[in-house]
Length: 392
Ligand SMILES: *Cc1c(COP(=O)(O)O)cnc(C)c1O
Image 1 (cartoon, protein in one colour):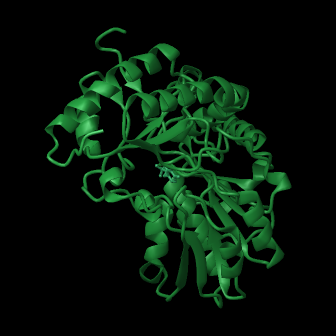
Image 2 (cartoon, protein in one colour):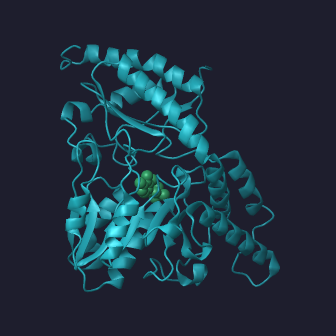
């Protein structure tokens, strides 16, 4: 492996823009710079391209193009969905979510009083040691007063998949709106929204090889909706502001590619992930897998190396240009272990030394072999320096 080669295993934080995506976007920075809302055909052709992108995204999600609203990111989609549902149900004062959501949902739900001027009761469902929710507990939490359920499809830190189709069905049976943050799921697992009872679904471009700064909110036909921003009539009045055209074109292309590579993601990428995971767990003593092994994304593994600090591990990996995460990128910078691992009850000594490896279709077996060659010594050296290391 060339010394300066970056081994990028941090794809749940962000992904490389696919070369085909970049190529599809390029003309929209140069010759095709018109405004899609303009009356002239110079702008109009850009509007046509935006609609084609909407079709490509609809094809990946199994929904109508008209059910999709372009936003600036996954976070905006999450906020728009949840606040829409609350506005649509002014008499209901209860929200259900989980303890392991991305901060985009978690911090919003914890601050609903500030955001809306109304006090809400928020049920944050517990998770078990392997990061799963108790379905019966979920069903019991659904009440007449529940305005919305917001539950992520795939966890960004562990890759654990929640039974979102079944959970949406249970909400529908009680006439309760259901939102899923599917930012990590879209493009990695098959999704067919026309067969599901999901009212709102959030996704983000930069987690599936499109650029940063573009997202989508799916709103089921007929479902309540309130714009997050007020202004022009773009997106049929659902999201004001001139479209981020080039990124939207890129996201359309990325969805087409994701559909074509879904099979590879679930075979070759999954096999690489499993090789990495099994290799680390067998060669490094006192290493523990975090999260349910079955109900999981094909690209993610989260492993705790007891008695070492995640940050120290990342620094040593960085010397070999190996990129991964400890906790989640959004929570690093603080030395608190991730809220996801804490919710799972991972012991302190293990939660601090957890590393998330997240792969993509651009990873190779050579890269995985390289990581497997370097990791045991990295962990071993750090443990030798640790006053707490009790030995194997
Ligand atoms: C990355 C991520 C988000 C936020 O998306 P942005 O486009 O970065 O705002 C939300 N939820 C999950 C699960 C994510 O992984």
